[in-house]
Image (tube, rainbow, N blue to C red; front, side):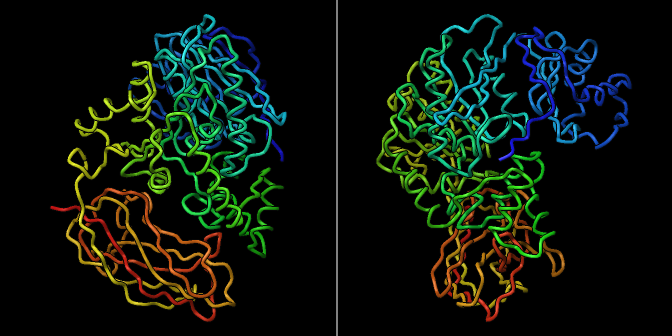
Length: 566
């Protein structure tokens, strides 16, 4: 696999002390400092791509950028990441492969901090750059360590900025790219929990050997970072005390981007990580130039162009992989806390489906919150536990009850249920619709009326049950449904722009007649007034329309919407 090493010298600055000052790429400040010269009255005239919104300073960010532009010093230059500072003002930039600014963040703090790079060797010899963030310039004193492992270090600035913000609260933060991403060696593998557990263990072993570690480590993450934290939890490492995993995908055969073999999204995702972070339609571009749309051919082409590796995507292997993961999670010795957002969380379904599989294991807690696709509520819990000096389940309970009573969170445990009188959420009434049978051939859509609606609120997961008969001659198919509202016959839109997954997909339809049951993410939004419809269509594993002859038959369709009670 090709790891694209950017033509930058590795520059690491500790608390403003310049270690290396050579930067071979164009200085991104030349694109944004004209704002200062113009008094922020008009955007600068960029050379090349237009500036992203995050690069255009607003409010207090203008003061920060003004200070940086007065006398900038290189603070950090690593791969696509560049940062400059002047005094207490910092400007962070994420550059694209074309050297243009893709994201910027302007931060000011009166506290000094350091970012130190080390190279950590994994069990198989792969080397991964690892970053320690501490509050002061002095040698870090033994302290708690929060571990964040992520594939997104070249995709956005969030891990970089948040790691500093967390460290300024007085703990060590170690963050690290997943293998095969950013500047790390090795090859990235989609949801390969066994490899990630090995890498997590090697990193934990390294942390506890450092003089700045008090040998108490906590793993934190959202989305794929949460999956990596969960994988670390399977190691039963004696120094990993707790895992805080928000909205983590875990089952590549059902709930994640590769659900039941729907390969297009997962291939795009991995290509984006290895390429430029913005190439979300990379695989579609490949397929549009090819005479075939074969998974194996597309994967071969993707490896050649993007350095992509994604080898374990057969449904049988995926299912076995997820089953092994669950069994290892059950044996975890750390306190395991999982969270999901009740709205605007594209991975809430993964966490909801995980809960019953871990029932009866008292070190596993499930938290529902209203912060969307975020680990902020779990981070609040983490700092509460750090302040109280313990992460055992007995110490968690008082905090959970306090916040449940304050209507901030809803905690699922064996003793507490979101359905009891402490629930902060409104109960719902299931609206069940029996949909007429349908026959579709892949080139047309079938739509059916669900209900007449007058601004109803939806809260929970939408569910569809149905039977599908697929002819033996059919290719591999995905059945995709879409829910929308029509205010008038020609005026239709998605059921809600706030819905995180108004398209529900079932991938890997089997030949013959089989029963299916699918669910949406957890949602909370207002359905606008109008007629609600559901439609069905057939696509291949890359999301393209797929003609089928004879037609696919869909029968016994039952659609349930969780409507909030008055």
